[in-house]
Length: 204
Image (cartoon, rainbow, N blue to C red; front, side, top):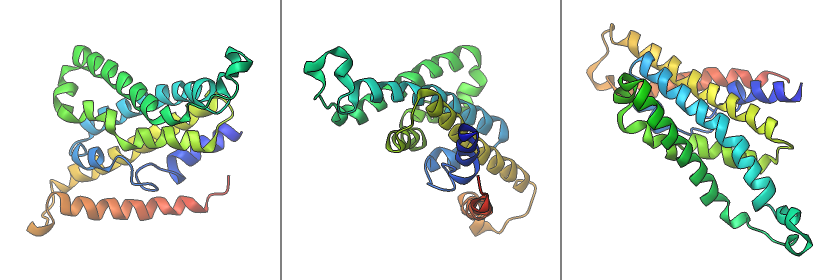
């Protein structure tokens, strides 16, 4: 039940876009059509699903103070937490590189439509933010970290697909010239953020 609550919270209440404004650059740039936005959202969700349990294991068994005690009593006082940021970024970058090669091979259309934003998943602050939140909240096991990662990814996916669907419909409307493009997108994002704030009243 606790993991279900965490999953729901990470999608709706602690949404990476609307609660923490993480991953906004890709969110605004790749949300022009639903197909591309969905592809990027799935890619981000996949990276989060794998990165969080891997980073949890690295943090739990290598980086935390006393984490190396399994090597012997002489390592019980070791503290490698200062390497956390480097290790986490390395894991994320590796996963993104593997994902990029996979998409290029099996979905070249999506690969071309995502362009530079696919490799930039490696520096998507929503992913690194989720990893750091996982470390800060000190989850008890890798499964909980995985649940949080999947929920955070689905929340980001939901946000970008909803925005893309709205922007596609706006292409059929007459919009005042000063608001066209990024201007109306900022307004829509703000309204969506206010809408998602309604989930703060949910008691889990």
